[in-house]
Image (cartoon, one colour):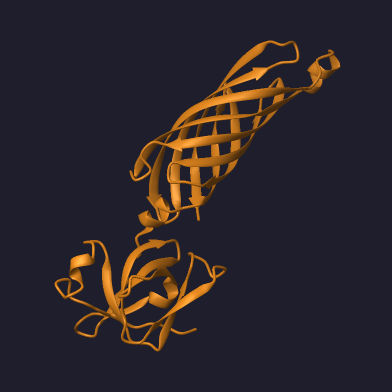
Length: 246
């Protein structure tokens, strides 16, 4: 793999006028560096940066950096290719990664949560896809084991992040799914049967970006189940857990 050695350019150079305060301008001294259309090797290479060109590091997303050439071409370069830089004294300088930038540009997220479904301990797993900065679709599966029944819940929800640029951000959710209730063996013998009910959900939560690829989340969800007797049953669920994003 080709490696790039970069020389830091002083901020008040001729290129400074178009560079933001948190952007870093460097010069490529290796033969070339490949630019991809997205932050993964699966994205096609569409441009190469030649030796001697200056580039601006705009932001990072997990193991990739978004860069802009002097001609205004923007693309993604692997973090490993930009790991080594030189300062003006030709001493090794590590190019810092902004993990929070990666958080703001995340697309996939997976989580594990513990909490209460009414008065019963519950465990949940989730998978989410953020298709805009403010909106994500999430699939969750929950199991709650009680003394009288075993409840399994699956839900599909849409979440709206009120302030996605904040490190601590509230959000709201609405969703739908089903709950499968299996009574205990004693109740089955007495004639109580398992049942499947449709669910509607409204919820609120708060997210806190921790570090690297980890987020802490706390949620409250109000679940409404339509039983086989056409009766509405209200359930309250509280959860606390961790998510990892990509």
